[in-house]
Length: 82
Image (tube, rainbow, N blue to C red; front, top):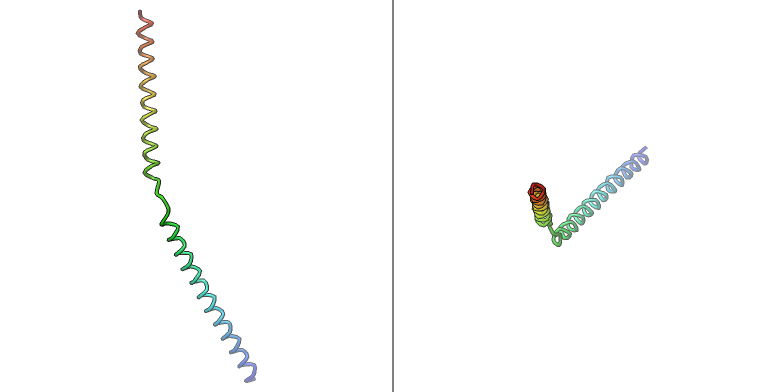
C-alpha cells in the first residue's frame, strides 16, 4: 500500500510541476508578445490627421463644384431670358 501511495504522490508532484512549467512558459510568451507589440508601435504612424485633412479637402471640393454648377445654371437662365 505504501508503494502505491508513494507512486500516487510522485505522479501528483509531476503533474503540479508540469502545470507550473506550463504557466511559466505561457507567461514568458505573453511578455515576449507584449515586448514585440511595443516595438511595432514605435514605428507605427498615426494617419488619422491626414485622413481628416483629406476628408475636409474633399468636402471643400464638393462644395466648390456645387457652387460652380449653381452659377452656371444661373448664367443659363439669364441667357435664356435675353
